[in-house]
Length: 251
Image (cartoon, rainbow, N blue to C red; front, side, top):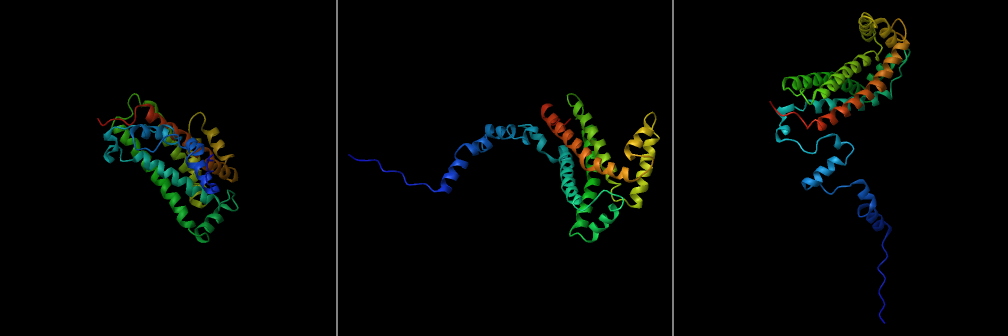
């Protein structure tokens, strides 16, 4: 009586390959197939935690660079660049009146590519303000703020204010004469506001003048509170574009 031959033993690498690429692990990560069909393309967008904020389909006019000039995407790119360069700068900076200025000087002279990182951070901050302003002008002049997109317009205004606050709070961190007196003038303007002016100024400075309390508060706002708020509102902004039917059509 003939007996069946045993299959040859498989190596560990082959078993690991089958487990990852042909079995549950691969399918649990990538729920859709290769995006070579319209259905798979939509599934890739709908099942991805980042891509699902965008619409699965867009109108052909939306791929034209002259429709949006990619100003919203450029603004988001600047935000990502500011996040990366800001984290790198945090490795060499201590928010104290005794060390802040010296750390900036050391960053400029002793740290390899430190001057490049600081200048990238500064110019990206300027560029982000410009692109946000141009993006809002494009939305306004093309009527993309009209119903049903009026709520997203309000979110965009909040993002513009957060961008200005990020720039304002970062201005004090070098702790030089220019930063000190600029923040003194700025907070004095805040204190001149009616009703809650004095309270707002005291809340920003942690006292009655620019000092150690102001530096640590501006640092905390600049690296934690305001970027977190901006990231949340950006996610809402992208999601509302999808919920409102994608980008507005040209008038």
